Length: 353
Ligand SMILES: [Zn+2]
Image (cartoon, rainbow, N blue to C red; front, side, top):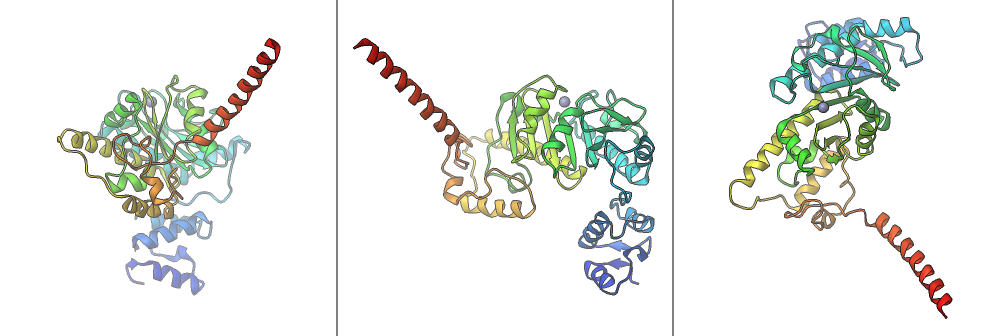
């Protein structure tokens, strides 16, 4: 077998009835081959130790244990999952993302927290009172979706409810990431969604909304964030920071932070150059939204016509690119109110006669 394995090679192996676990441990996989193998592992088709070993060298994921667990599983089963190579790999990923958040100054003090779904209603998460830049795999915690700690020596993050409420509301969310990147948090403090139509990465990978301020860690805060995750994957939390979710993995949830933070910095620089920003056209934006939809990334603008993308100043005051405001709900309420006012006025007039 040759050293570099392509998608075609893997497909041929499947056609020949060969097990994917027979790949040599030092095999180098092309990106599409790696993706194929990852999907195969996720489907349980190749869930065994040797594939896990073969892919680990290519920084791919370790296959999850065969049996899917939930919060009602026995303590022994949950402990076994928590101490499995699968969870150890995810704990290392949490440490790695923590280091990257800290290295980029997206977290301060013990701020920031990260979670990864590992079952129907259970998740691994970061501990409280530990700097995200200096976490160890043994610091991590396992919680159920109510926030009860199931495993782990350290206490789970105080902000876990928000992560769990996102996962409950958005079944596609496999990982969540929360931090306080200064430029993005500046927009959150101002209560502003960054203007759109300027940088492709931002349009394709992020769908941003602002959630109102509530005390961090309260169920109320989580609720307000969860209300937005159907159409948005990156939420600016007013006067606090940012939280993102991914349907892929924890690194992808973290990438939303890099993309949003770089975008917020860039448009602040643009704003200082003394010329109005050049923006992309509606057809150009439509192109990007098509890519976004094909990647399975939500956006409230999916399905809108090109003309609708550029008609509404509410989306981005000053530069036109938009979704229509929610007039229908408001109109419904107003017309009802009008009927009540009319009925009362008629009654009063009748009594005056
Ligand atoms: Zn925070």
